[in-house]
Every structure is written in C-alpha cells, then in structure tokens.
Image (cartoon, rainbow, N blue to C red; front, top):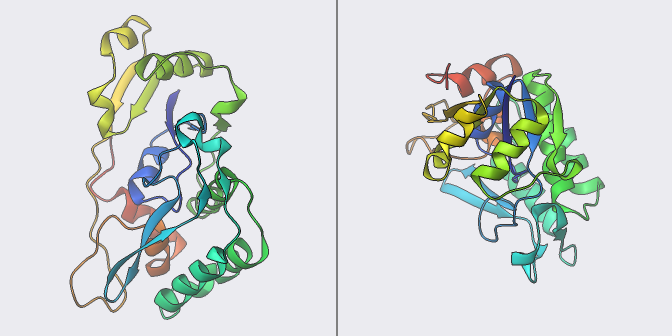
Length: 235
C-alpha cells in the first residue's frame, strides 16, 4: 500500500493532488505545527494583473505551540465575503466558473468556519470528488503517532500498514532512508513538473503555482486530472 500525507493547506496547488493521485491512502497531517505566513492559511489565484494572494485570518497567538488542527479562524472581519468577491470578479468569465459557483457560495457565504482545518479539508474533499479518486483518507490526529520528522513519518507508515511512502521534494533533506530500509518500506520523493495550461484570456504569459482553483476554472472535470498528471505519470 502506497501512503502519502500532507498538511491540510488552504486552496492547495496542483503538486499536492499529484502526490495524492499516486497513492493508495492519504493522511491529513493535521498534527503538524501551524506555519504562519506559509500555505496553511493562504494561497494564490489568477488575475489579469498577476497573482493575488488570499489569506484566511487566524487566531494565531502562540502559534509555535499549536498544530494546524488547533488553529481557529478569526471571524471578526468579513474575510469570507471579500475572498468570494475576489474569486467571483477574477473567474466569473472563465469557461467553468458556473460549475463551481454554488459550492463556493456555500463555502464562503453560507457556512461559518471556526477551525481552519475544517475549512481546508472541506475544499480538499470537493477536489477529491471532482477527481473521482476514491482512496481511504485518515486524520493523523486520530492516531497516536510518535517521533520527530523522519521517525514520525516512519511510525505513521508502520501504524497505517504502508509498504511505500511518497515524500514531497523537501523530504530528501530529512528522511532517514536507512530506517525505512530496515522497516522494509520503500521511499519515493516527489519531483513535480508544473504543467503549463490554458489560462482564460491570459495574454501576459502563464502564471504558475496557483491554487488548483485556477485549473478547475479553466478545464472540465474530465480534463483537469490529466493536466495535473501531465509529464508526471510516475513519482
């Protein structure tokens, strides 16, 4: 069984879903330390003037002592309405905006999110449904994983019964390959080649590394999966 894991980041990029599409099981690693000013609560969308960063305000005091699963959304501002407006204005004329409009209206204008992790996972599950990729999905917080960095990943693999594990590219910097070899667990390190795809009415040159939201606005469900995997059919 091929396992991979990732923090439940906000509006994630294509590389995250590439890794998941190669796996037989996925773990939301919600026990990782919350990373302020990283991708846990923000990501980029397309505008005709370049990329635009969308950030969810959080109650992140003493965030070094908190996991991403602990972080609360700061709802003292109308951030959700503003973000929906930004998405609407920049994507309303895209080919497949209407396919996702009702989902986005519900996510931003109807539901109220108290925990960042719940908001993020809600969006992930929507993309999983579009991808029609049905694999077991688990939450790290539901298990008693022990260790630090490489040892923590190894413990997760052993407790979940993985025979192989897919690290992100940065995994090469800390993975203890010998300990995985001793446990008879194969390691793979993702090297994602970002595809260049059609961005509606973009005449200034392709904008890379945006949220997957940009891709689904430009491609139908049956096509955007193949774009994610383009030139990336293997690990």
